[in-house]
Amino acid sequence: MTKKTRKRPLKGVDDLPAFPEGWYFIASREAVLREELIEKTWMGEDIVAWCDEEGRICVADAKCPHLGAHLGPSVGGKVRDGCLVCPFHGFEFDTTGQCVATPNAPPPRAAKLKVYETREILGLVFAWWGSGGRPPQWHLPADPPGGAEWCELGLRTLRFRGHPQETTENSVDLGHLRYVHGYDSVHPVGSVSVDGAYMKSCFDFKRVRRIVGLKYLVYEVSAVTHVHGLGYSFVEIHEKTIDMNWRLWVLVTPVDGTLVELVLVSQTREIRKPGRFITGLQFVPVKLRHKLMNHILLPQQIRDVVQDVVIWENKRYRSPPRLCQSDGPIGRYRRYCRQFYPELPAETGGPT
Image 1: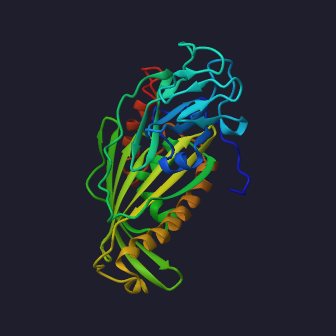
Image 2 (image 1 turned 45 degrees about the vertical axis):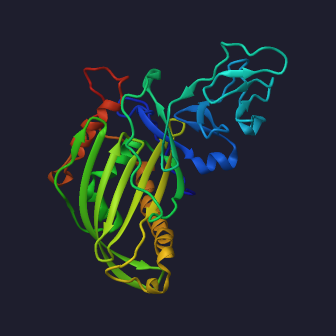
Image 3 (image 1 turned 90 degrees about the vertical axis):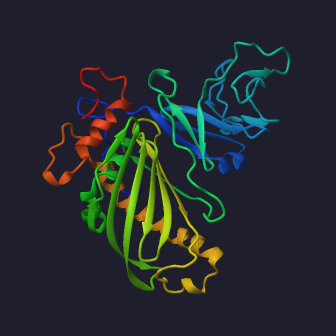
């Protein structure tokens, strides 16, 4: 973002703790294999990620337990024969974090990297961040149905000042869909359901869109949102007039306590017998239609997020919020979020 915005602190009486407990996105497997060694700031920590020769991905603290050297590629860290090699003294670590070799002496048993438990969904790699180092308290869902009928994943990343609780709140804030994004006839389908760390919400809406500058179309859409903690939202979308199915992951990860990375991942299902053709779509081979639509839809979702970013970067978290009757399940959503802040005193139960 080029526009200057007010820096919003994430600590204080009226602010949210910067790092909610949960599973957060690291990178795609494809990116890890391509780069060989990835370094990043994640949940306020310097981490590295790599893959060994058996395909096991490790996410670990980026500081060597020997003498504290940074292990990232920017300072000379590298992967050799599936092991991470420290640029300072050549200590080698396997994907369990254990030091397995040094250049001049037997590897010390006590030299072990701090590693994070990982989970992979359709080639998207996540790691667990626990408050105070707690182990996973819940797990991400199984892979959704895949196969050749779904196109390859499309990924886009935005970085801005924000917090994952506030970005995820959009999944139940139906009022902003019309006011900010121009959706029409927005209404919930059933009520929001909560089961531990899992929250589900369903809604329908209509939207008028210009497709590749050719003509205006009215979309009639049903959306089912599956939220698993504040870093993983998965939306199943069915466009009724075309009979098109696509899905969207909204993956929000705190970087350093002020910035977050929001990764949008989009995937569209094969369109064999559309109920209505978009201009020109009938001339596109069936095997390419869903790839083309995914290429069109993802930038449109990015534009929606950019509209939200302007608000997220400049808002202040309010607790309690002054809600009106049309705000729906925002209060329930905030109660759902309490479980992700175990470090807060029990009597407060977390943010409201």
